[in-house]
Image (cartoon, rainbow, N blue to C red; front, side, top):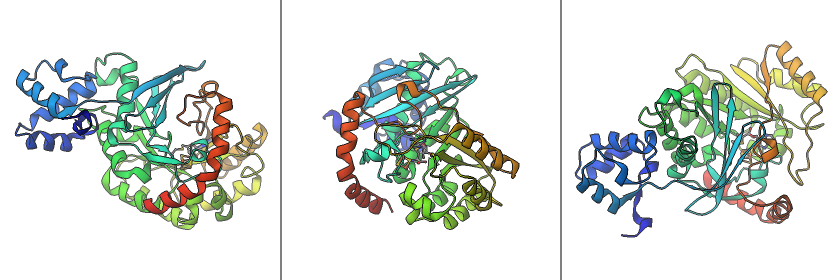
Length: 381
Ligand code: SAH
Ligand code: SF4
């Protein structure tokens, strides 16, 4: 049997792992043993699994594997932010970022190679869409980052306390694989990360927001970026399909459906100089968000070559922030982390390239971007 035909156990949630063992004619409890070996003990081979009999280890190595994404490059920022470029066995590469902040450690995880949504201010979008990541590739980022911090003694000591699905890709357009990976993040036999500490960020795919509220209790962030349809159509093209009025109603439904007390949805708002940062935008935003339990996170735009946008002036960000807070919207400004290693929001492109080669690639990609967007957006809806 070739390696490609083997089942990658890294990407199986507990029920899937149980099914796998039952189909092999083994007992269900094996699933728990193996999950612990993979995610708690960070094992990458069956040889290490000392409480599993030799015969079963042999059988497993014939039909299954534990294969994470390969680390192609790792960088550490002045501020302690770490970034990994992962080379995927299924093709392409993605980036994953770890942001330490006191006792909290947030891992920003990618879900697709590239992205079809093509937001006008996002470097991942400029790259076009290549493919969906498998569940093993998605959870494999958590697994590899966790291995980079050394052996885990227990869940509480783990440096990864939070996960945000805010890396490359639109998680709702790779829904099933993202869901499986998030189930493993939450599972005590996986990473034991609580529902409030896992956040899925979406550019606003309404049907999948409704679906998620039925399937799994996690926190939601919505990439809003504009307070009216005209501007949002330009910045986030998915808005043409799912406009603001419907999006706001979906946010309200999501918030009503989730069970934990912390029902707040985070609204992300990138601050683009002279584009969406004027007092009139702040006024419209207050009106738009009226009656929905939200907190607003203002993200100073992170530039990249040929972006065509600039970061808002500091004074404009402060004024915008003050207006929202004064008008009853709990608002924070996101500190930019890891920008010296291109690890800040929207700077992720999954390439180990120098800046010049990167910008050449961007120029080229602009031409085939629109076709891909049409295909993939259509496919995903
Ligand atoms: N596709 C999802 C999640 C990944 S993007 C989404 O769009 O929500 C994560 C966040 O980074 C989003 O809010 C996105 O709009 C923001 N972002 C993208 N490009 C950015 C840039 N250049 N500067 C600042 N934030 C950016
Ligand atoms: Fe895709 Fe999110 Fe970037 Fe938009 S902001 S192009 S949805 S990754």
